[in-house]
Length: 510
Ligand code: ADP
Picture 1 (tube, rainbow, N blue to C red):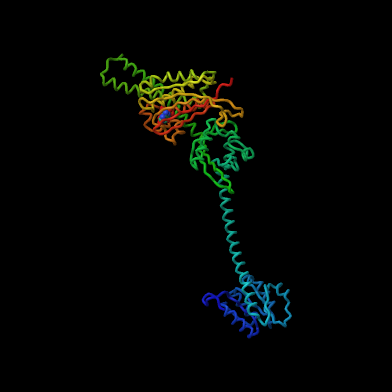
Picture 2 (cartoon, protein in one colour):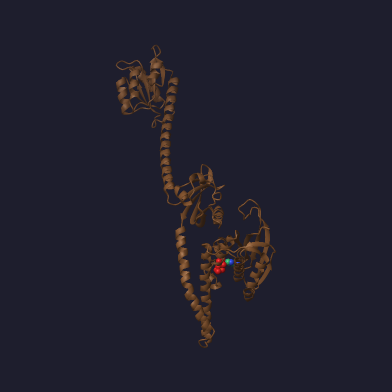
């Protein structure tokens, strides 16, 4: 029953037997089964043949002159090239077969003459299969070893890059934000030891600054799936405030969803930038004041009457100079607030007074733009710097009017919020907060700008400052004032329908 085609022999078998009849018989039987057969009558010839072209299996007679089967087998097992070839011993029924010796010298099996064809074939096929599987295992093993080596190398490279990166890097669990690994730059940067950091969250270590931008950054990252170079303020162990550009990516570590946080410390760059801006602003203030004075003198007609056209030009010059003075003052104001040169003088004050005063202050502007102001004040006590809070509210109302259309309405309202999940207080004891809202029916703010407008010089439209006379600093100043009151400010908006600005402030405890 030949099952294999002649062109692809099932296996290469070497038969070593000094009896020609046996050789012929085995050879014919195996050839018929589709094996490639090589037959030799001497042990030494068999050894040479096996070394020159190692067969898949050897059938080896035990009783042979010159070199018997055991010796041939020992030589085969001693040679690197032939060591792995399975050897099946052949013995005559009358021979005294030392099975133990056969196995001891490296044989895998034995068959006895006269041959039972099926038995011989079954034993041969068994050992060929075992050998094939062994080879497969060896190859797989080598592949695995290779893979392990490459992985170890990659891991080593990554670990080195992680440890020696000049950028602070941290890995934290996604769910709870607990640090599971940080590099030495991270520890140098935040001033904590490895033991103090691992297993803790950024909030537990007080890393986020009061500006809460880190919390917002994390929230934004979860919405977007990754984050690049987000400016965030960070508090070190010694309380030093640092500015970083933070990038976050999702990574999977041993089936645990984690975040990879890479920081770039730009504190010094930021300080130089601020220093430069305030220096330029200081230098601009004096000449600007003198220009304004000169324009006033011209406008008052003290140097002669002006033509109508000259008055128009003068009025353009005056309004632009006023804008520049506003800009310079805002920059200096913000800079002084940030560097804590301006201290908030907090006293007990009533929300009604502040809300009404702010509305009254903006009434003229609203009338000019034909916008209606509706105020619903609330009689609650706050612990606040009333001038600064007034500045915040007037700024929000002024923006609401600026970005509204004729005959739109701006609502100024307030309500008391019980602090639970939305707590402003760091302690666990609940205290109430006041939520002031300024709602308009204006053009609205795109979703992706709702946070950035609170940054310096950030405007939805680059032409806003020219067209609407703003500086792009108002909301940055508002945020700073609100934060210095331990409060929170944010905006919600629907394009084309309007915006609502929220100011959440802790109430004065009675
Ligand atoms: P500005 O002096 O330009 O008003 P702000 O910091 O107060 O500076 O505001 C920043 C930008 O936010 C504005 O230029 C405008 O693009 C947008 N903005 C603020 N308030 C509103 C609002 N109520 N409706 C629409 N856009 C607004």
